[in-house]
Image 1 (cartoon, helix red, strand yellow):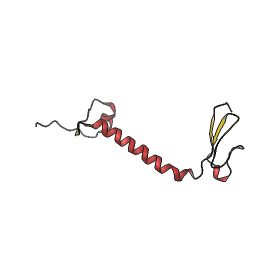
Image 2 (cartoon, helix red, strand yellow):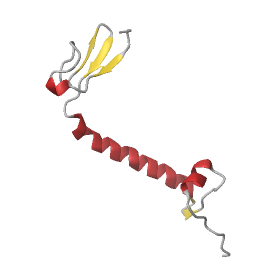
Image 3 (cartoon, helix red, strand yellow):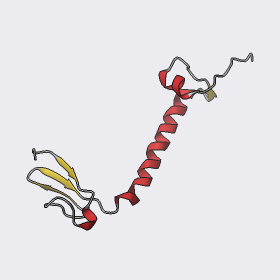
Image 4 (cartoon, one colour):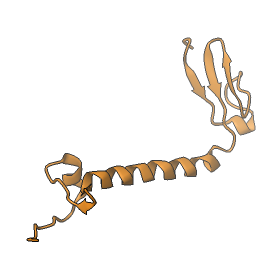
Length: 91
């Protein structure tokens, strides 16, 4: 492999698929980084929750201005995310 390449060996718990894998470790051999996380499925839910919450927060930032719901329907993301529109009301 080229120097600087990265291998993620998902079979680390059972010894790995790469001859140079060291289960549970991140090692650099011949300028190639080999990562072999253990119990990867147990580590993913936390990151998935963080990514989801970041997406929800970013969407709300587009929909709320000065503490009030004020969607900009000309924004491509807002336009595609909304299934209905607010009608302006007189104050």
